[in-house]
Amino acid sequence: MSNTNNVENETENTAEVVSRNFIEQIIDKDIEEGTYEKIVTRFPPEPNGYLHIGHAKSIILNSGLAKEYNGIFNLRFDDTNPTKEKSEFVNSILEDVKWLGADFRDEIFYASDYFDAMYEGAIKLIKKGKAYVCDLTADEIREYRGTLKEPGKESPYRNRSVEENLDLFERMKNGEFEDGSKVLRAKIDMASPNINMRDPVIYRIARMEHHRTGDKWCIYPMYDFAHPIEDAVEGVTHSICTLEFEDHRPLYDWVVRELEYVHPPKQIEFAKLYLQNVITGKRYIKKLVEDGVVDGWDDPRLVSISALRRKGVTPEAIRMFIELSGISKANSVSDMAMLEYCIREDLRMKAPRWMAVLDPIKLVIDNYPEGESELLEVENNQENEELGKRMVSFSRELYIDREDFMEEPPKKYFRLFPGNEVRLKNAYFVTCTDYIKDETGKVVEIHCTYDPATKSGSGFEGRKVKGTIHWVDASTCVDAKVRLYENLIAEGDDVLKEDYSNLNPNSLVELKDCKLEAAFADASAGDRFQFLRHGFFCVDSKDSGKDNLVFNRIVSLKSSYKPGK
Ligand code: ATP
Ligand code: MG
Image 1 (spheres, rainbow, N blue to C red):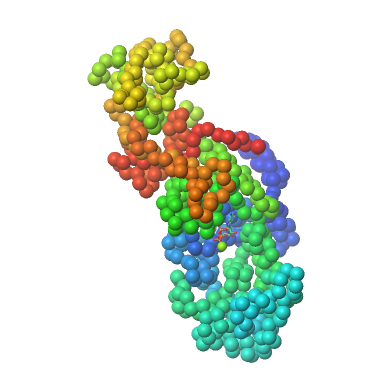
Image 2: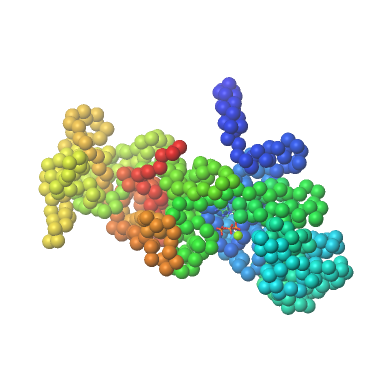
């Protein structure tokens, strides 16, 4: 036994060495050089919306690194901007991070808890002659900042004395000045080629209620000043963020250097996750929710974490997808088909495979004794014995899916048509003898005969049939609604138009009259199944009830994605 383990470990180690991403390489070096004792990472969401699949990438990356290096992973709400934050978002974020299985430190952090530390940091900068109070208006500051081609111009307030700055800044805090009338700026370099370094504003006056600190503060720190302090106070070692912050890194480094932290954190940028033809940005998802295009943040057509969860996607599938999509410094776009592949892979063995008829049509077996029925013992998942068996009832009247019957079939159609014999999955062979239409010409009932000798599992070795179809027993089946989802953006378009004129009209189709085998009667919210020959489905957590079953299609069985391509 121990031998096998050794071999396994060896393979694991070799694989790790080969596939180390650029962030792991940086951390390896930091450890080798003794820069940090323990690795600390964090996920710092701004509570101004729900998390989406892109955030899942950041969560899985940061928590994964902490785990890999036996370090610590912090969840910190970046709530320094009081205008947008809502407790609803804090709660949803907590739920989503937990659901994804990220192991964060018990204590939850809030950037607003560091307002005092940030205020003291500002005082320290002033005392070092590295920050000053500026009376220019926002427009003037913008004008003075210069452009990419031209250097900026120094503010006339730049050379105020330390004493005057200390006095003014304290009075800013005490509420003596109007909103927007003064700011505190870092004194760096108005001629820097990096515009972020041209005396950036680090504090502003704004009388706004904060969801945690109330009206204690009327000055609030700017993101670029606040974020490095948050990281440093928490002892974060590697502050991993997305590429758009690359140009802000010199300022990040300036702040932690000037504030003289003993083990300053290090910012590392990676490329965001984008999905082809799918709306991922928080701002854009928010707009769809607010405009009522979708039914809330957890509408299964979205890729917010709560929507994916409600649809029935597993955290394991999301993790597999994030791992497959890789960590890189170059922007790229991932394919939804890859996520769907991961979902199928994850659910293939886990989900029971039961029978469900989505577009029912009656099938009557004329030679099956009226009033009788039998129970057939059927495996729940042919590839996974562990899921056990169940009893499926069979009787004279069944339902099959409409698409499994044709009056006049084309060549290579092996399902039911007049005169043809097929296998009813897990049951008997039946031969179609007749069918009945209504006044509109729609087929409403099919008649057949069965051969009792062909019972599934009886060892019958007689005739072969080419088609196998699924069915449910009309006398015991349960009713359900089934929701099928497609992309929100109409096929052929990449982006959703402002006026929503290219919304996919089929993004949600609800089938109202589905017939499911009796076992489904006990399914409860969040349960996942494979509907044989149809796909993977999940009991909707919002709208489904005991006598009103509602299922969401997680993914169909067909795949266009091939791993490694
Ligand atoms: P969005 O870009 O959707 O508006 P955001 O970046 O404003 O999101 P935050 O709450 O500020 O949302 O993000 C928290 C963390 O998640 C940040 O570290 C951010 O870099 C990361 N993040 C956001 N979107 C993605 C993405 N698409 N891929 C990877 N990481 C992301
Ligand atoms: Mg943001």
